Length: 306
Image (cartoon, rainbow, N blue to C red; front, side, top):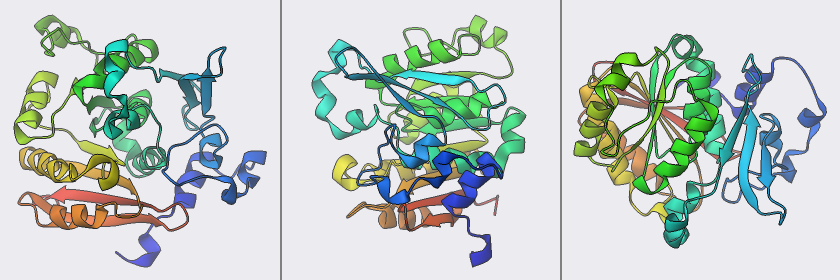
């Protein structure tokens, strides 16, 4: 890719804020703590989206709120970060803990999606978010006009469903106990909708999700943010590659965006190389690299879409 075409995170953030300057823009970047990439209310980047940690009387966090800078209605997303009591036991498993945090890669991944695909998003294009955790990017995509399916482990579905009902009571597609849409729900759904689905990272799991969510022909866009980090997730990226390859097999015109944060021994280089050699992946391109924040974004396309 030509150097002049490569974006930086400063380009992404300035595009969201226009030419306006505020006290938050003057914050010293050295104040940020990017050791793992989880964010809090004092983070410079998060001030852009008015991020707040919601705490109870004992000063323990029980949720977060944020306002996306380009939302014309300035709506606040209020998300609980609490898991159900029977889900607390495995909390120390890395993947499950990560699902209760907001990550820099997710916020800047969505900045990139909005900057590059705003026309498609605003006219109802479909998005599948893989390993969504709290699901902020997918929720923002839906809030700004797109259709979204948020996917992650079965263990955090109750949290996702609760947050969707709170923030999108009129457009959330609910599932029955077998995780399938009822015929009546599909027939009465609006053009813009959002739902949460469990997804085991496998080709069979992808096909089941597509069938159950009413997207048999695949999605227009697929987004995964900070899903590759071997010290926390092991080599689950190998399964992620299989999932992406299957999605591109089903819909070669789908665009897959992977937003990652670089850390020691993260496995990202291996992930990218495996993607490039996958049967149904025609091209993998790095479209953003920010050395200060150690963030990278890759776009993958099918063999018929290069």
